[in-house]
Length: 182
Image (cartoon, rainbow, N blue to C red; front, side, top):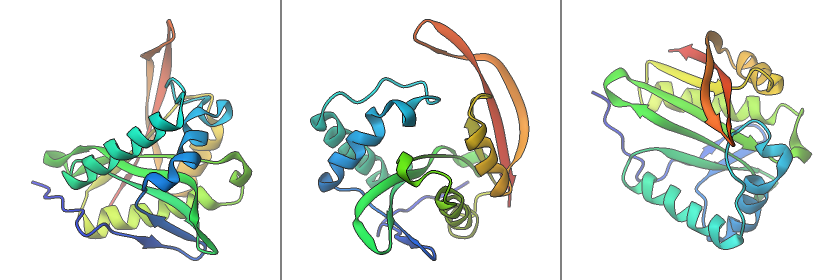
């Protein structure tokens, strides 16, 4: 069975990016990401209403990391590491199946620049080599074509289409499951 240990926190670097732990100074950027209509369009979650809620979210995430339940990185450019432009995480970890779900969001100013593909590839490598996962999955909606393209660029393949499996704001919607094997 999978044994997780995120201490010390694993900072990751790519050619352009620093994937780092969030702290309360990131609340403004997290508030934007979690309240922006464009970012949330396909996520099926209510927007964050206040900076205080964003701070509470950061606290909740860091508690989960400390308890080795899941891990979330703030995505920053190496040239400006103090400003978070997105997040990426491994969560819904199935220890008995050596499987985790990857989730991500990115500030719209940085869309279509290859940043998320770069971050996903880095987290894939961490998941497969350090955590020794067997598989990763990404879940998106059929309408979120950009997310599907990013997952496919990172080597994920479509596994299934779940009909009306997600309920939000009074209606059901479909989900598409992508996966990548070690």
